[in-house]
Length: 196
Image (tube, rainbow, N blue to C red; front, side, top):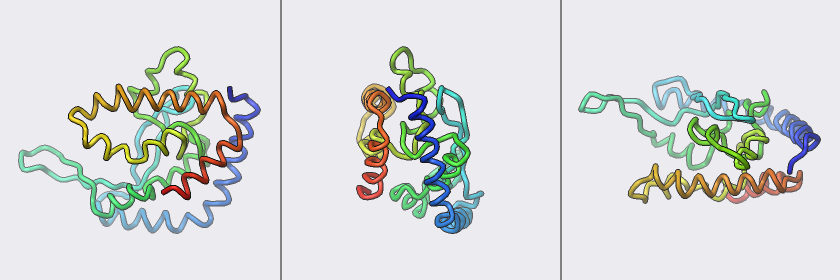
């Protein structure tokens, strides 16, 4: 099980790494936000409430990939733009999460931050996953990097997600917290960079 000392060391590592990366990535992030603003016709930064460490809610930041339009039946419809699909595929839409790491809502490695109705509903031993901050990458993130495509092939994507994928993610994330090491984080960061 991850200790309080390891959690502090993890935070120090996150801060050092994000402060090293931001000077190089700030301009690309600004450029992508500007392109997204033009592409979607809305402000290029998208924020959404997610479940964080200890079940506390926080705002996650992403580059906007969806464009809103009125369907012919009159209701609001959201769809990914061509540029948005590229951002999602390359995970460049997640670059603003470096600011989530900087302010302490997220870590580079950990369980992905979920929408309400998942991690906040965990019970018993499963709540172990909430001990750590959610991460930009992690073991479950890497295993399910093509999750959207997997769900598209299901007859009932919502049911499949809740009964198969989500259950497996909890198991993987519990194992990560129980067997945490600094070297595991380094390994997962390197795997995320070179396995795209």
